[in-house]
Structure formats: structure tokens, C-alpha cells
Amino acid sequence: MLKPRLGHENLGLGVGLRTVHFPHILEHQPEVDWFEIISENFMDSAGRPRHVLEQIADRYPVVMHGVSLSIGSTDPLNREYLKKLKTLAESINARWISDHVCWTGVAGRNTHDLLPIPYNENTLTHLVKRIRIVQDILERPLVLENPSSYLEFQDSTMSESEFVCRMAEEADCGLLLDVNNVYVSSVNHEFDPVKYIEMIPAERVVQCHLAGHTNCGTHLIDTHNGQVIDPVWNLFQLMHQRTGGVATLLEWDADIPPFPVVHAEVLKARKYMDENLPVRNQANLEETVTNPSSAAIPHPASFIVAEVE
Amino acid sequence: MSNESRNLDQLQRWMQTVISWPGGVEAGIDSEAAQSEIPLERSELETVVTASSRQTSLERMGIYANAYYARLLECLSEEYPALVSAMGKTAFGAFSMEYLQEFHPTSYTLCDLGAHFPQFLTEHKPPAEENEFNWTDFLIEIATLERVYSEVFDGPGIEQETLLTAEVLNSIQPEEWPEVTLKMAPCFRLMQFQFPVHEFISQARKGNSPQVPEQQLTCLAITRRNYIVRREVVSQAEYLLLSKLQQGLNVGDAITCLAESDLMEPEELGAKLHEWFKHWTTAAFFIDVSKQ
Image (tube, chains in turn red, yellow):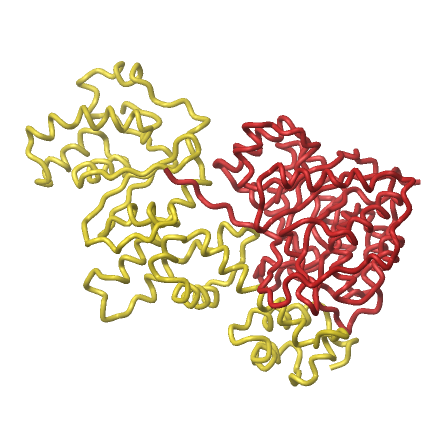
């Protein structure tokens, strides 16, 4: 029988580490439970980003979250990348390494986007094989996140939730359940997000993501640019009830406010962590259009700007 | 083509081609590259990508296509803010689109996305302008220096190194100095420009709208201390001497090169050398000395 969270610790309520918050964190050392980093921003760094990370890793638990593993691609796995990932994880004592159920490029290219895959038997076999190789190289279970998506393929023969469940079981990996992504995709692809959460094998959920998104009228985009909306909090509550609690993190990647605002947002999760609270009515799973003509874009990765005297 | 015979590799190559096609999704579907993976009429897109009740399959593909260039352009704009200021957003966007066709993103990190932008601008300089410095050169020089800033900022530095001290230098006997070679800091760069682009970049990065400066030969020494990129203007004489030391010449030979250059009078050079070396050591341009 599997241990909850595959045996990983529930780190509490954390915040995605962003460069604009470096000065605040170093000066004030806020009482944050843990931080998640974008792995690719630090793997090759020999400058200030890496220096700051080392100081933060000395004080806080750190988790590595990647955006370029491209586990679903048909390109060969980038072993040099994996080697650097492992080295960084060891040097900062990363509690675990995560990435996404997606592909980011093919034919040697990287679109720097989290692109969807068709959910069928062939793709499942392909991913399971590659996840096992990655886990062998990293010598630890990989934790994979359900992505937000904006299209589906005719080649799919199963739902995303079924695919993710089977992938996790067959590859023996962990899951990072992004409840905002579940919500975004549920609106875009017109499925029931509650059923999705209910289907996920609770003991494999190692971590949860929360974030804001943009409502473009005909679809939602995972922009990570604002507060978490109530329907997403409701899904979080359901996830919490099912898992008994997992390390939970807020992502805020565009229009980033001061650190205390971001931290306060993730602390709202406490309201939804009382297991006696009933799951809110499905009728509440609605939201208003906030940006119908938006040029909103997802922000899976970010560029670190040089600091010059 | 049936779903059974369409493999994942074809689908991914097709999708990547379509969403990154500069002329948009429909032109991407029609392109030879996409057709070679999945032969498809535009009207048949739904045989690959499903529609939702609120969006057509074409609109759904468009979300990825719009995001592709928007995201990469945003990243390039963040690395080259002064170039955006000099060129204007529209022109910068147009050049970026061309750049991304020629240098497809291939790295796992966005830090590499703009690495070839100065080279791209240089290679696309109008042929008629090859022998004169002008506006295009100014833009190339801005791009070159902004890229150097990025590389120095996140590349190897000296923050964890034991720096040269006055004691170490004082331990070198006067007669030994000509044979001494100096090891430059890994973050040290020497750059020569036809315009004072460093000033333009500093102003632009502060959010100001600087005027295009007059052409003026500008030599810069760039390094990093305490994880911040530092740059200072050096004279042509300093530039020559530092460049010779950077090439690995010993101090004596480097000074001889400078003395033979006619950039300074011998008396003036003699007076300046001590001052220069003292400052360069304090500024940590060098991190070690070796006596041959």
C-alpha cells in the first residue's frame, strides 16, 4: 500500500520564488513554509539568481519545478539537461522534482510552451517508458503536473483524468495536482472538474498548485496573474479532503504584486483545509468574464533580467 | 489520414509547425512543412483538433499560435529593453519575428533565446552601409552590450574567489614585474564601441527616453562585483594595455605594445601605470598573478 504523498512531507503553504521578490525575502525572511523554483532559471546560473537560491535553500525547504523536460515529446530525452537537474537538486536539497504532462518541442526545438498530447494508449506507453527512464537517471520519483490546455485531439481515446491516473500508476510516479489547471481545462473542454479531482489517486498527489487565470469569454487562459477564484478554492478543498493535505503552492507570474500580497493569497488556503467543511455547491462553479478581448498568454517560464550598475 | 496511422511524432511536428508559422495558423496548415506531416485542408482541421461549443478548432489552435510569438517576444524585450527603446516596439517586433525564424529556440532555458540577436542584426545590416558607421551600427552595438550584460550577470564570477590583495602585489619585486602575467576575472569583458551605448542603455533601462548620442569611440571594461554588473569607461591606452594583458602577454610586453602605439607620451605612461594597476586590482579585473 502506498504511503500518502508517496512518503513525501506535507511542506505546508508555499510560494513560487520569483526574482522580483528576492530583496524582500532576503531582508525580511518571511515566515513562508517553503518555496518552489523554476528549475531552468537556476540550472546554469553562476550569478545572483543562484546565490540568492542558495541562501533561501539554507533557510527554507525548496522544491524544483521544471518547464522543459518535455516528457511527452518524441525527441530523445536530453540527458545533459537531466544531469544538470539532478546536480541542482542535490546541491540545494530539493525535496522533489516536478514537471508537466506535456511536450514543449520536437525536432530539436523548444517552443517554451506546455503543449498538449493526445490521450490514448500509444501516448500513454510512450510517456510511461520515458518517465521510468527519467526516474532512473534522477534516482527519485518524478512528480508530474496536469497542464492547462486549450485544445484537444481527435486522436484521444480517454479523458485527461484517466490518462493521468493510469500514467501515475504504470510509471509509479507522483502527481502535482494543479486545481486551477483542472478548472481552466474543464471550462475549455467542458468536463466536470469535480469528477476529475475525485478520480485522481489521492495517495499519489505529492503537491498542489493554485493560481489565477484569465477569462477570455470563450475560454480561460492560465495566466498566473491574479487571485485564486472561488471555484478553484472549492476544488482545492475537495482535493484537500481527498488527500488529507499536501504541500500547496501559489504561482503568480504576471503583474506580480509585492511579496506579502502573494503570501497572503496562499494563506487563504487555510480556510479550505477544515475537513469538516462541506464541498460547496456545484452551482458556485461559475465566474464572470474578466478579459474578453485579452491578449493573455500563459507564462510557464520567465526570463531573469540582468542587474547592471 | 486515419487516426490509427497518424503517430505522435507526426502530430507534434505538425502542431509545432502550425503554431509557429509566421503567417498564422491557416497559412501554417497550408504550408509544405505541415502538409508533409499531416496532409490537410483547412476545412478538415477538426479531424485533428476538436472544436468546443464556444470555439472552433482553428480558434483553439490560434491560442497556442498567439502565445508562441507573444511569449518569445516578451522575453526578448526583457533582455533588450534599450534596443526596444531605440528601435521602437513595432520595428523590434518585426526584427524579432525574423530572428525567431532564423534562430529557432532550441535551448531548455530562455536565457539562450536572445543569444544570437546581435549576430542576427549584424548579418542583416544593409549591404550599402558596410563601410560606414550609422544608425544600424548603433543598434547592433546596443544589442551587443545588452547581451554581454546578460552573460556577465549570470555567468561565472569572482564573488566566491579570494581576490588579489595589496600584500600579494607588494610581494612582487620591481624587477619581477615585466615577467608577471595576470589572470583576468572570468566575468571581465573589454568592449570597444563607436557610440557611447552604455549611457543610452542605462537611461533606457531607467525608463527614460534617451536621445541617440553622437558617434564617439568608447572603450568599456565590464565586470561583476557583488552579483551586479559594473561597467566603466576606459581610455584607448587603457583598453590597449588591458587587451594585451587579457591576451596573456606579460606586463612588460603589454606595456611595450602600449608604448609603441603612440597613444601616450612615455612620461605620461610612466605616471599612469601605477594608478591604473592599483585601480584595476581594486576593481578586481585581475584575480591572480603568476611569475614566469
